[in-house]
Amino acid sequence: MVATTQRNDKDVAGAYPTDHLYLAAYLRCSGHEIVGTTCAGDRVSFIFHLTPALSADVAKFMSGAVVPARKFSFEVLKLKRLIPRSKRRLEKDEKYLDTNNSD
Image 1 (cartoon, rainbow, N blue to C red):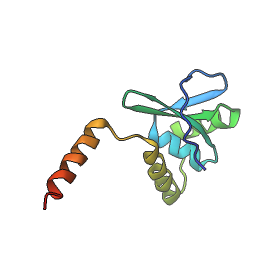
Image 2: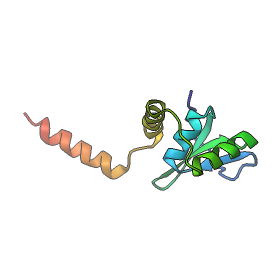
Image 3: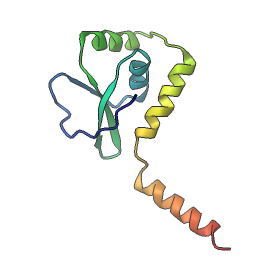
């Protein structure tokens, strides 16, 4: 299960933050749990426990390792749900709803 706890201390010892969506999805597919998220402006970082296994999996990802495509795409979708929609997008949606509900 993906944790959605917000944390403000990005530089916690033993934590590995990444804002690389596909790396985070790969790490999830490799069995690593997200322990929190942080937001800095429009950027969201996913936080993992920093372990030797995680470091090895990051190196594997950077070297072109693969995971099952369906599992990977499902993890990408789940991670995208953790990313808050921008205010501008929300305003656009509200404007669209207002113009389509004026019956």
